[in-house]
Image (cartoon, rainbow over all chains, first blue to last red; front, side):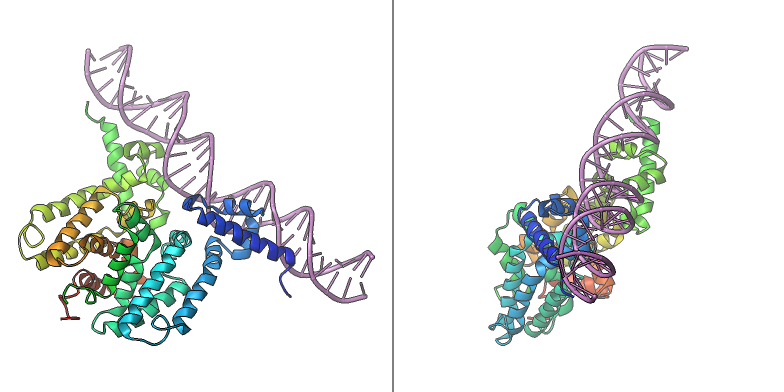
Length: 191
Length: 191
DNA sequence: CCATGATACGGTCCGGTGGTCCACTTATGC
DNA sequence: GCATAAGTGGACCACCGGACCGTATCATGG
């Protein structure tokens, strides 16, 4: 039994409306009711389709996650398989950083949902595990698992947004900081 | 005109009740209403005294902040003034880490309040600035300001709680990870 | 082409939140 | 003892995410 056409139409409408609302930056004025209204459906329709708001955000992020994950698993080196450990690490950091910048509002919605929602979902688990693997390869003597979590935390959308707004750090500086966090030997310091 | 005695009594009752409730770990079952009820007063009494819940949390943390800040500003070295830059950095990290462990629930309440409430309050600004100073002294070649924010982020109570619950990292390991984050040259790696 | 059962629908309701308002009570200074 | 200013608390507000359920719509077998 395939999905009924009206159900499919509504699902698409909800996704499009939510996408647009999240893009509009009003981060916390995006509510279940506002999404439902923008999509022209009732709240219950949104919820039955996606379970809860977390499910909706997941559905929005999922395709983008797939794209990046495929590039990581089977794309061109050094982001994909192959290449030197250090280059693989830094290429991956750049890709994650770009991913966060491109999906700021969605990731922030994810973070706000539950206490551990940011870390404890399939996509993040994959990012963290992959990050730990690449850290292990590039820096065999450190606690790669902890460092992976720490770097991933530095990649939180709310943290990056804060750094840009209040201490007025620009994006390249934050990017450089994250690289240095993951691999301090590369740049200068302790050369 | 000094504070009326009944007002003072209520303020103390609210502080004590809130303290107890936060200690009880039910983190998000702590609401304005539950605090007011536990203190035996109305919600308005809580709010007029402290402005909002953030003000209440601030009032609870404030004395502890003062204690640590005094130790930092005028205590024994290396936490207080004096001593080598590296020792000063690591002593400070230990003190901050202990502070977070001792005040987990209060700090989590602070984090949950607003998007930037964790970073953008007087106490945190002081911790971060001091951290940047000590990083600058110990590691002159890095971007100390960014690193200070990154390390302070790794010290978030929610992050530490998460690491202990899900990847099951124990406290000493997290502590060691934070030290390594701030000063990777000290331990091993790139020696 | 229609009847019928399954599916999707949305308005309403629920318990909860943080915060405001205002008629009332209470402590204080004269 | 009294006037007055300060403090009080419960009713109230707007809002949230989510559950419920009678109704409308769709897909399908006859």
